[in-house]
Length: 442
Image 1 (cartoon, rainbow, N blue to C red):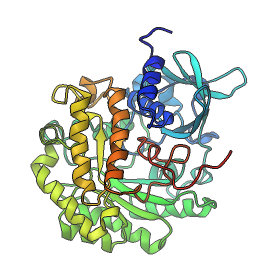
Image 2 (tube, helix red, strand yellow):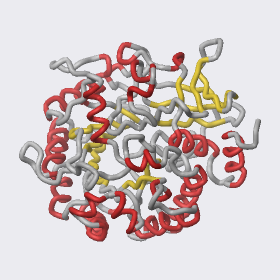
Image 3 (cartoon, rainbow, N blue to C red):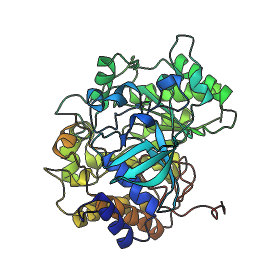
Image 4 (cartoon, rainbow, N blue to C red):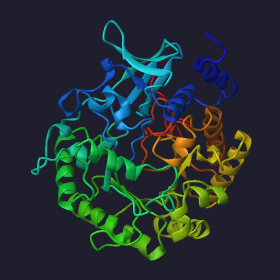
């Protein structure tokens, strides 16, 4: 095994940062760099036994569909679970980001048992999500539940991307790491069903099917999200557009799920409308902390709202929702993206921690998604490798430390915290927090 191998890098970081769960080291590496799939590990799409990747908002892939080979025709699983192996990994749920060139590969052994291989060595067993019963039923229109109301995080979260494009359009407005508009175009080009604006009645019909067949009540929350609305969609402004889905859901299924909405940082009166419609958790994502990087990477948000106003609105929204229920996301790793990003991990962590301290000092707990450098985005093109793994590991350490400094516990609406328990799949922040209860002996 050459010293330049990925295994050596991962083991070095595990040794240097023993307080970060080893599960999180692998998870972050898979999220930032993607994973390859042997044909033996692909799903049979909606006709099979495995829940396929739904492309619920972004592509989260390191190649365009035509570049993914067979994985474009037979979708990989939505998520994988890592367990066991030489590192004795506790159950770890990882969102699937496909990269045919990754040193990580999921393949079946001679007995047909799936495993994760790194540098050719089997490092863990791999579990795949079973096809949920509700995915086997279609709406009256013939649309699939997976297209209208896919579930992620091992079935915990119903992901309702009700507006599949973003009105921040083109190079002068689009966030520089985001492929929402391209993902919409590539699915259309591939002839896949990909509804632009989801009809509220169809959303309710899909939820009806989920509610009927999810007898174990595994689905606990829904997220309403989509692109930014700078003008109107179907005659509604952003608060009203996303809010009217929440209102309809809460009227039809009062209290069945925790309602969350991801929208821009809106003025207080608009935020109050979300609350009045029954939304419980608000995610006004601030994307990146540094002032210069926010301007460079989020030109539309800078132009329409501005960073200072964005932050002020986040703090104002805590008065409406309560600080614990305001959970803004940032895209972890773009801080280090060429050409504008920080050159060292130290500087990037210092900047991001400053942002965490700013919000956590007000009782607001941000969360983060591990940046996936999608190739159709400006930052993905310029940084195909993403940010260094060390940045992601040190961020987990800084995040947990900052939470402890301000006496905060894991935010609501994310399922259980702790390695071996967490289901949040697009970063390891929940895996890295202390578990609520003692781990079971098994």
